[in-house]
Length: 485
Length: 96
Image (cartoon, rainbow over all chains, first blue to last red; front, side, top):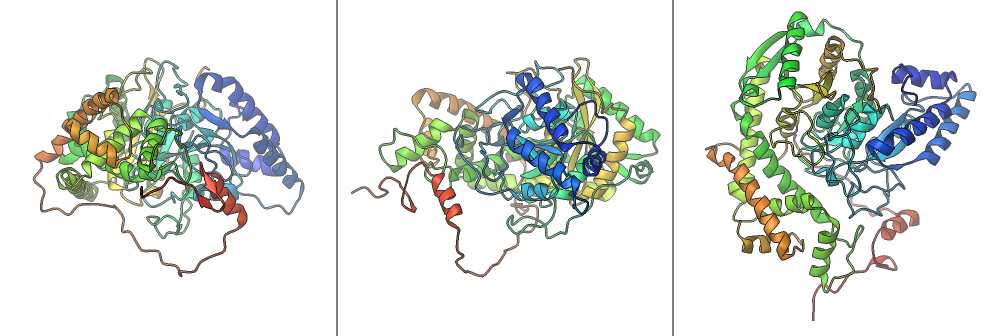
């Protein structure tokens, strides 16, 4: 896809369907771009060039027939995080454990995108089993931030963020357990959306922490995120937490009046944290812009905010230790050749194929769930979760959306560490099952984007898109600007 | 966390760790425990724990065995590191 093609996905799709633009040309140019850019950025783990071109030719042939019916993403290339199953394709979750695993079925989101006519051009890099915030724990490669390659792209869905940000692909999917879509989207200057818990089926997605996990989208604009959400959301009996809702159309026209009608809450606890200066400046500018549009901005009080990273760590690791227990080296995945008995075989299969971060979280989670610690840490953290959710519910009695910078910190250089609190505003959405969206706002002095975050109440996704749409319009961020790479 | 506790946890979590790794894990896990201790300052015994943010519903279906195509059976079995016929091959579970 030509990066200079300054049209949105819906227009591109209708030009493909009318025969004005050949899908084959779009896909060829998409792969030409990837070949030039991904040598540096390393966003993709695997590409699907041959199948994508065959699919593109089928689309072009379909166009010749007058009675053809088209999906709303007919012929549009999309990248998929490598923890989402595409039938008959390898899915590694960036782990050596799943190096040779072939997905036996499509994830629900893939089924839906397939029906909409999307073309899956490749699988993107991520932190191993989505455990990390930099994409550096991948067992295969480190993805670089396209805006400044000395820096991390964020994570865990760093490959998807970098692929969209650098214009290699217009859309991508990721998964978000504690900010894993929105944090890399913010670091790479694209729109990152995480749905309300239960809105999008996770069937066919490799689980991390099941009470937090949701699918998320990457796109250049809010409208495209809304389009993707309209396609992939909706009930699915194969994911027991999926809400029994019909598919909703989230795509709406931009209406700046919405900013006059909503009340935006800013948690006063934001100011308890050390926020990077450049982020703080952008945040204040963004608040001023909202005020100029007539938005009513109020201070809200959520005293338990400071417990968010700790409670996230306890519950996430506990759920990780249970979910990753399924990797035993028997039914699929890596099996050691050094085992002496069944226990030794399990232990060595896991030890030899899982990375340090994954094993650390399993061990911590197992410890937390042991009889001596279950009530002290795990059960207690769940009660803190209740406290936090009660306080969030009280806050939403006073405001419609909670607004904050996406992160406390700018991305760090490859090899350096982000603080534990960096993604605190993003984790809050996962803990309470709320929808969140990050919108690129400006650039730092080092040329890296800064994002702002809106969080809505449960299942307020449609209104969230409306507000985000309007905010994107007033932000002044140039979406046609691409990294010089 | 003590070294003996790490040994126990590694055994039940089925992760083999050597002595050099043990020191590194102990340091990291103890740092994590220090970090999450902040939660313990809250006296919230009156609150119910939140396990899931939405109500989980049972999804029922008839308990009927469905025919599975050979393609699917083969695909699932072929993913296994070792198999014999239509079975996974594993080491003896109960030692004599």
